[in-house]
Image 1 (tube, rainbow, N blue to C red):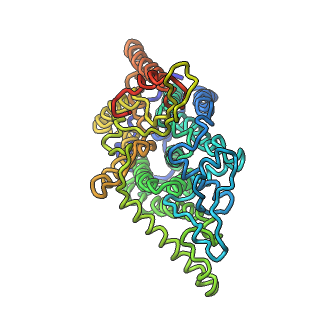
Image 2 (cartoon, helix red, strand yellow):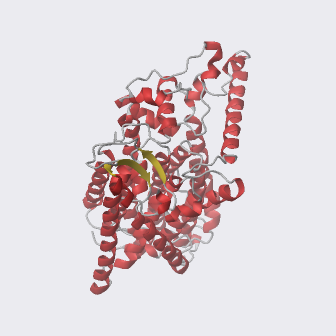
Image 3 (cartoon, rainbow, N blue to C red):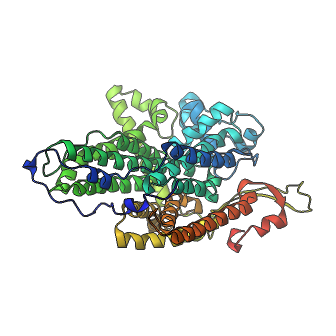
Length: 546
């Protein structure tokens, strides 16, 4: 599990020095061993440990997320929207309006919560919702299996939060060619407070983060597979100016599906879709140039761009539209206009359905661009990296049984400060490292952080939009990747001096231990445990957390 091939990856980036340009008429039979090693460094060690290590870390993170998942036994924060919307999707195919007091009815064990409307007044019971349905469909799956109770509507969030740990560990391993660093990435995500909290409640941001991370992971695999195919072509085929067509590329198709799912969970997934699509094409151009093609960018534009548009343009759009199948298939959705559409024949029905769907989307866009309502826990994007104003997801109403006169039961949606503040230092170091080396991994991490964070500045400055700390959750895996990349530099490769590797391992190990202690200290207020009021107050590290 040593950090053996870390630096081998560092020399590869989208604009790496190309091999000597080749004469298209020179024929096949080129020496490919060094080319293959340069394009696709070998994965480290025993491949079994490449799975065993990440799976152990994932089991640890999964235990944390599923332990006492039904606590608090209450509808927490925005679960008041998504738990009911998800149940409605399972029952009706669309979101419906619930009666007053529906949260208490659900906690009491009844699902008789829906407003009743006559058939010709179905729109009076339609719920106006401002997020796409996929995340709520996933929440609803848990309710369908386990019932409409806290465990049921939180189950899917815990599943995707746990799977995210495995995906990050495997992705970091592939990027660094180090099983140790891959496991470190998974472990840090397992004990990251904000990810932990959002993996235990039925909010959409955990699902958005999962699909964004899965899409990125697929593109990293696609990068390796593409370079393997280029190395094979280099060995076996006559060279030309632009290189070969790389075909359908199933991992890029999988990335398109995942990123489309991100957009079908929350619209902010579109920033990652655009950024990662550009990144994938940059990787294609870098690979063609590394082979030594005379016209690598022409090859990218003529051969990679068309298939890229299909995988990262058309397929995400189809995925997004498909998530609305319940809205299209029933007359009960908000703004559906079913009666008028069906009265004028099948062609008009299709046209009017599409028109109604777009009209609904413009209404939702208007909501998001004019949302200025003040909230006691709102924060600005420049406050997020410092964890200045986390959201209090839950505060128990005069709990008892803690052994003191004043008890507290709370859930605070904050990150693990050691990880977040360490990530700030790592991101600055990653910027410097990228400027100095053009390392493709540093560039990819920085781009992901930029598309996950910078668009919110526009909404803050131009629209004065209401925002919250947990909007930063999709950035968390990439913050951890920045930490892991810098950890790899500190430890060094197998060729580094023993003293350097020992000192680096001490620093990385100490940081990891501090992060674990920090998470353990905050755990009672992350998991909603019953503690004394004094113990709760001691864990409020800043006045702004109260």
